[in-house]
Length: 511
Image 1 (spheres, rainbow, N blue to C red):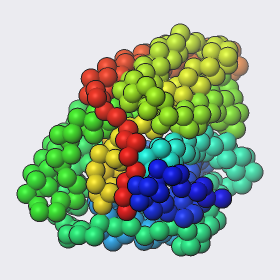
Image 2: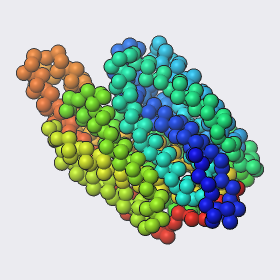
Image 3: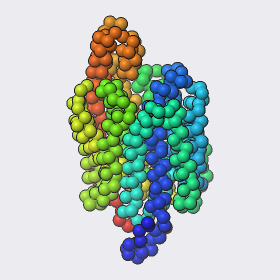
Image 4: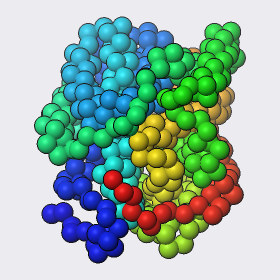
């Protein structure tokens, strides 16, 4: 039931969008699905590898193709939505996402899987910026908008937590393609309901969609992300260095071109706004510090503490619970105290929780893990909700798609940097463990490789190998967590400085 406008809103002449809360439900569905999809592939990889038998390089591209493309196209797709209509782009992207999920599920060769994952990234790049931009246009009352952004943020957190549980259940009962097929009915529901409930919104004077800018953005982001990931995995190589230089040059040319265009894809002058740039930088550093922990925590729970996939997924639920609760109260807290107090405080809380996790060992009990994850989720929910609100309201309503895309790009770049940089810390420490005589090289490549190698050894030798490998992995993970904690405390200090005097508006926007 849609709430009646308050007297202040009627007096201000603000027209509230009818059915806006039901429309928010549609947008939450899209965010939930994208978040779930981001987590299930990792669980499905062992089963997929056994069936398709990709090479090591092909397996990396199966994992990376989606994130490379989505990082490269987010800004372009956010700007496209501002031009052709955010509802239209969302529904087209959702339809394509559903159909491409079917192709992913029935891919029979590694090459096909790589191509379909890349195409899924194109569709995925349309969804997140469109959902956040539509919230900007659905909710003109700032308090309602803050709550809506909190619900949107909570859905993303819930999806990240639900993904491993749903994926684990499906993989225990069906074949690996089932983790992609669940996208189809959800997307069908989204499109059917979205046609009826979502209002169209676009920039009334959009200007052309500049194709050279699109290509420069794609080449720049893919080049930089590839260089970071490849350097973390194999050290500095000529291909990685070349990709990094090409990417940096393309991004420099992109910025130059945006400054010269009468109607750019994204107005780079936005970064002169201290609140906008502070919120984006805080998001990037937060994700950088968190992504390594979240990526390796699943391996710790399953391969060190020997939990089943579903059990490991349930063990990570406190983070989602904390994020959901914080997302719902973040806007109110930012108005009562201040934006910088809530964002900086949330980031500091995450940093302290990560610092507590540096004390874990192979046999650490769940109470410490669960409590730390709950605190991490709560801090992240506070920070991400308020920074999203700051980013979204720092621009005119007709540029909401491009601003949302900048926020999402920071998230993707932070994830790539975090997994690559913190992953290299874990890997370098892990590979130095001393195993029993006859330990194969594959056991030093990854903890999963050590578990497989141990299954082919005599019991006593296997136990010695697993003990050494698990202790080494845990040491690597706690070291990376310490780096992550430092990153979060740095982000907290930066947010305190850059978000000074930043406030969430209480004035309704007119439409």
